[in-house]
Amino acid sequence: MRKPADEDVRLFREAMRDVRPLDHPPRITHRRKPKPRARFRRRDEAEVLAASLELSEAQLDVETGDSLNFRRPGVQDGVLRKLRRGQYRLESEIDLHGLTLREAKAELRVFLARAIARQLRCVRIVHGKGLGSGPRGPVLKHAVNGILQRTDLVVAFCSARPVDGGTGAIYVLLHG
Image (cartoon, rainbow, N blue to C red):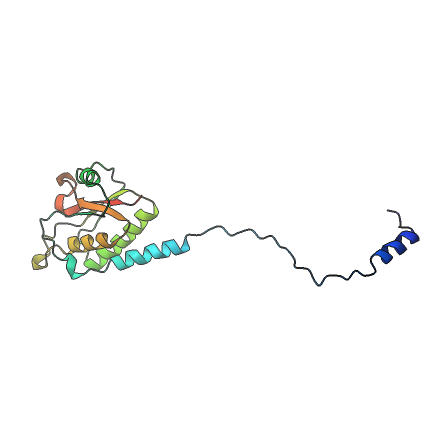
């Protein structure tokens, strides 16, 4: 590079005589946006599942041989009919036989959370008929009925066909 002529330097300084430097201009930094995380959604779903595991007295009116049927408002008759006939492919199942109420609730909570996380559409829950529950009636059946009704991502459920457990099991259709 060659050095500017003295005349050029003088002319430049004369032209810039009234110019004042700016006070520290703001620096522009480009940061990459962090990838979105579903942290709050997962936490909210976990809280809903935990709250749904509380059994109220209102759900304790199911008898041993009673069939369970439930569907959210807006679910068409045909959907429940197909579910009752076992026409949806079962993607997972859990057997709660022989567990205490506390153990069954914990297992069901984990099972539902995993099914929802895996975006499963139809699952089977075997709760038993409650024949060994004595005068209390089918304890696990009552609990499962109440829990599923309070779990928002459960679209519908009904007792299974006899070959799949009859009134001792249910098919559950999840929002998918």
